Length: 210
Image (cartoon, rainbow, N blue to C red; front, side):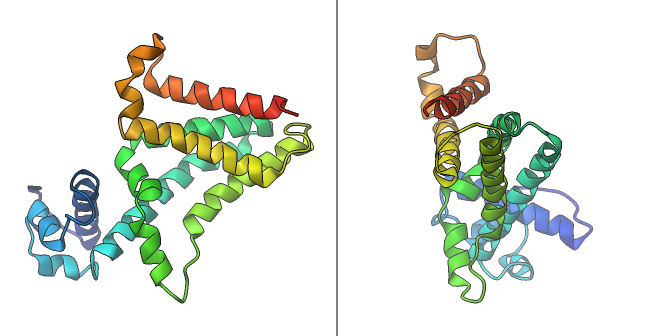
């Protein structure tokens, strides 16, 4: 149970989200209830309802916080002039984010509930957070093509392939599948280095395929 003195509303929001994130990832979304979250932080369920209408609202709020962290990491890359180097740096930062924040990564990219909540909002069901990240990746790919990379390749296909590849590698790590066979690699690199080097090889192969 979390024991701390909470002075401001935003502090309590953060505590609620942190407890919910842990429970969603380790116990599962369906098994997590408002009552369990309340017990985890030492407050009544009524207190949580003052801030979030239900656990769908909570999981979407977590999803937004995670994307906020990811976008902050991406901003400095806008200053990288060479688009091909920027593309590789994007992959590296994406991997670092997932390794540093595995629980956020699962909420953002491996749980269906945030998007289910978004799709239930009939007035506005656009996945703005995801679109901003993928748009940055797509524009970088298009800039790469203007410099002679990925010749004659569909930029959308390159974008999706790059995202799918890095997501697959990261997901294997987050779910511990990759880590369980790390001895097979017989290398001195860290798991993060192995994942990034694999992504870098893929990008180079895509570029040389035409």
